[in-house]
Image (tube, rainbow, N blue to C red; front, side, top):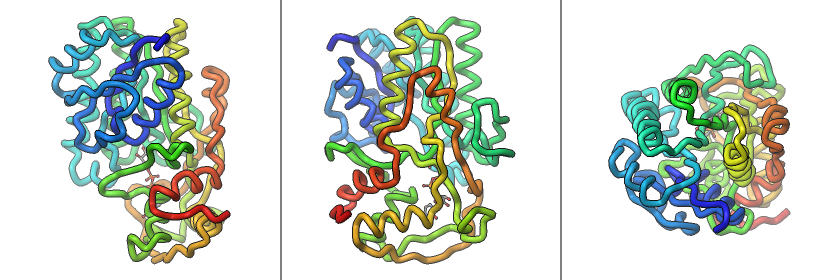
Length: 328
Ligand SMILES: O=c1ccn([C@@H]2O[C@H](COP(=O)(O)OP(=O)(O)O[C@H]3OC[C@@H](O)[C@H](O)[C@H]3O)[C@@H](O)[C@H]2O)c(=O)[nH]1
């Protein structure tokens, strides 16, 4: 370890664990702080695990004092858009109050560099594509609002108390570690690519496609899918930026291209040589028709560009975690 320790809240989760692996490879020691409610203990492999909730400020502060991290990466959050509509209290408690507690711990313990997981869900339904960072943020669900509130808290704390941050607005995270060590393991699994792979593998009867009457080229929703290993790389670049004295920064993390649900299904069929049984369903409430990042600012300011986010690499790396062989 030459770069120092980095505290990673939510380090046992999907994006968190991939980021820990990359940070370790880059010479940092990731210290995971996770309550293991949605995280997986066996995904914590590259540094110690402190079991704790971000709402437990005393425990979090003690971890900061004990490990003396040079920066903090804050993934820990609730992240189901649909659930945020039916149980907004959970989202405001975990994502807003939890982040406030965490920021106060950082203030008290003098930990002044924070990398924050934000989301394209903070934009809502954008007036124009691609989405730039100065596109107005008008989230359409409590999840997006909770992430936007946390962004505002970070900005205000930075201005008043001098901490520095990078906020990363992820588009659609997907794929799995190309080494095959860790993958995507949500319970329940609601995301498109895992559900499509589960349907191809026969572990669910079919994939429900939520709407094929959108004003998009083939009628299905378009998203900017970004490989989790690319997201991990961006966190490393963000840590390096802050450790080099870089200023506060908020950037999109996307591949800069849109892929429709039909295109995903074609790729899954081609790469696994299995058909994906599909059932057309009504639109899912709260789904924007198309989301697509302008990735220029992340490239200019962090030197970030997606390397694993072509659809073939995404499906090839994810398929083995759902019991599927890669055939093409
Ligand atoms: O079973 C499914 C799942 C998803 N979909 C569709 O596939 C597209 C992608 O849906 P996903 O649930 O994978 O991802 P979403 O675009 O809703 O949200 C994602 O991006 C924003 C992040 O902040 C969220 O945390 C993440 O879930 C949507 O159009 C959705 O309606 C289906 O048609 N069927």
